[in-house]
Length: 499
Ligand code: NAD
Image 1 (cartoon, rainbow, N blue to C red):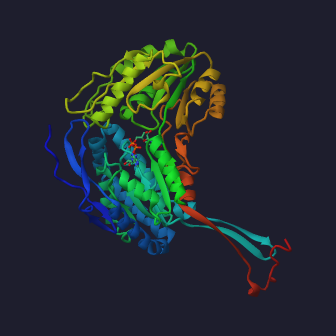
Image 2 (image 1 turned 90 degrees about the vertical axis):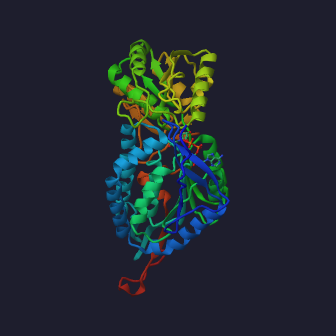
Image 3 (image 1 turned 45 degrees about the vertical axis):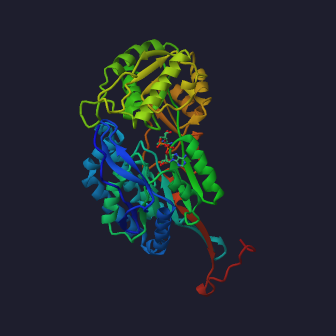
């Protein structure tokens, strides 16, 4: 076993790297590929959070007074800084989270696109005006920042998910508090080094490491106006209810069980590629990972043999090695949970046609190999609950109607895909399916910075989705101003009487 790491991470509060309070508990951050301890992360307390919130509140007037164009220019600079450290960020993602470098590079590219989308704020934050809403009277809606905004994020996208929120929040003139996942705090430490170098007014961005205590502090703190959460469904519900009760604006993105429907006319080799990338990429630890294939009619016979064969050929190993196709899951506890899920699926009658329970690229790593369970029925727990590992269930449906029924009976509705060359099938599917993100011959309907992203049903609580145009709505309050000018020489106008 590796020696315990000595490096203890700091928080970033009020423009300074700041040690967490003295009584704080500490966790090891480990590389899931090797079990090596990388650093130690403090589980900060209420006083640390309070210092961050106070700094953020104090920074609000100064930051709001910075012009939208100047705020956008800070983001242009941030973009350049992140691009310069792109590879380092990707390696950090792989080292602390486990996904392959190819995957981590794609994640960091998406992170940077979020900054690029936020650079458009002088355009996207514009309000609306109607001249002569009444004679010589004008009405306009302007957008103003909400205040202090916080985000609580999961382990599976250490670079990208925090950036679904941070760039848009500060672009709109808000100040920000981030609570990274305590399992993967290192990548945001790097990102905050670059935020620090921007010379923003102290307190505009703050980072508080920690776990449940910091989360609960965020939900209750009267100095926080808006909360974004991404993580598992049960915690999303706690966050949504508690933050709303405290009067905050809140969006909570939760867990998933994503279905991929394969029609008999699908292009099988491309479909196999798409399904493999979706089910086994990031070792199945994406909220958009496809974890159930629903084969329609004789698609089953065409798809399953090549799918199993190609999945068996995937190489499990350390994500830093270019030869690895599937990295470890996040921890040994996660590995044991995923193995247990496979056994439960088997016990409930599913047939294990590819078994990853025995995979091990390193005795100290937390590996599970690609696993496929056939003959799964929709009522089995393995078909209904989120496993969050490289485990793919196969369900058969006689018709597209039945397949849509299987998908829509799930309590989750994060993402879904259909593989077919039929426009008519796609039209039916996209029209009827109950999910927030839909892929057509795309295995992972991944977030696109310039569009809103979220699921439906138990995968999301709130109304405004993450990034895209919804981010501007989430991070601004609308104010409508009605005005007339008596000395304009156009008469005074009669409000509400003469239109
Ligand atoms: P998690 O819910 O365990 O943790 C998410 C965050 O909540 C972390 O910052 C953690 O510190 C905090 N937290 C955990 N338990 C808490 C509790 N009891 N009270 C208060 N705070 C708590 O999620 P995770 O394991 O880090 O991430 C994986 C989950 O996130 C999966 O369910 C996945 O589907 C989901 N996810 C969803 C999306 C989406 O867009 N819908 C995106 C990424 C991940």
